[in-house]
Length: 513
Image 1 (tube, helix red, strand yellow):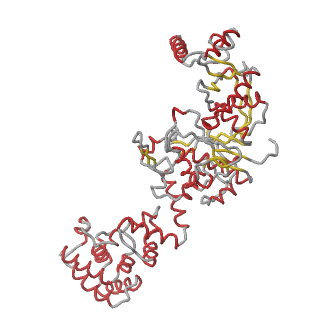
Image 2: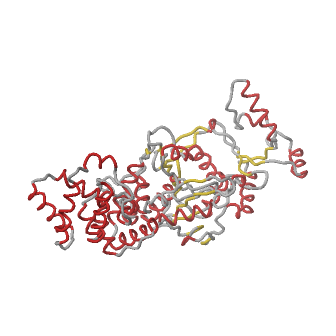
């Protein structure tokens, strides 16, 4: 590779919501480029118009923007869906006119040929091959000699068909029995014999290029130096290497990323796995108005983009140190494509939540308080001040993986208990419970109603009466919160204030007897 400026691209197809595996591919490209002072491009590969899904392109842009993965060039710069950069347009459907010239160049050099076989004829050949015990028939360097193409038909017949407008595709002419070798930054040297490769279609009958031609041409024209993509494209890499050679172009370096695996490690992670096991596999919520298909996203489940990105980075890579919690800037500094693993990366949703929890705890008190206030307003229609939010967070944050956990951990902060834990009432509420509470009320009233003072008065009561905590503590919590689970009840009482606590205690005595 020459000393060119590093340029990488993420080139998804707008066929539905962007899978988290695709986001990881974009992330690794982004980290690689930023670490080396290069450029990250977003290109939309929509050559297969039959699979185009409305809204998918906007989803890709929105998902990357939420993650903080901002392209320097292409689609999605500054979150805008319009083209931006010197190589526009960046949608392959908008670049359709330029690909024909490159296909013609391959035809003229003898590296491609016209094939006139109809879909029905190809299907018939496959069925005959299957009946003969060969279910994996390919159009290749051997079978092409018996097919209807410009290698087998007379020149005048080919010319006549082209003049008549007969349907055709342009196929690559794969060399016969040749070893194609290239070095992959993750997998080392890869060698494939062309006898194992078929003559892929490069240009379809509608004039639209296939992925193979379009991505090689675009990567060359956009000066891409490194192609970092999922391992599902590894079988296509030998063809791409040959196309670079046929055109006489400098080949980019390749790096094929490992798959994201199901939690049990058995197979590629899919939407079906997420639905079955109850976790998202997409960054944002998705809804297809035409089909009614929906999918949940990490953003809407309460994940921070920082936690989501940190988790994704570790699915197939680690820095070689004990550090696990990284900001995006720290990931850029630490990232190396040479530390990406070859083996598939097993997804663990519990670990994903742990990453989010760590980033939750790293947020500033001011930001957390504002998020808590917004969550309370949305969930309970209640307005709480900053002091209340800060105190509530000290009580509930350690138990939370998401800010929503802290918000929903104690609905009793915003309304008197409508009912009491019947099991614990049966176990803890006795004929003496009401008397204990009535004795505590004036002791607490004489304090400043802070958490330490409330706890001190309670302990003094236990010492004076000789009662154990188990005889009175759960009763206090039942009366104030309706449950015996939660953080310090004295912290909760400080938040609620004297009048609210006394009203709740009277209600509990009246209700429970």
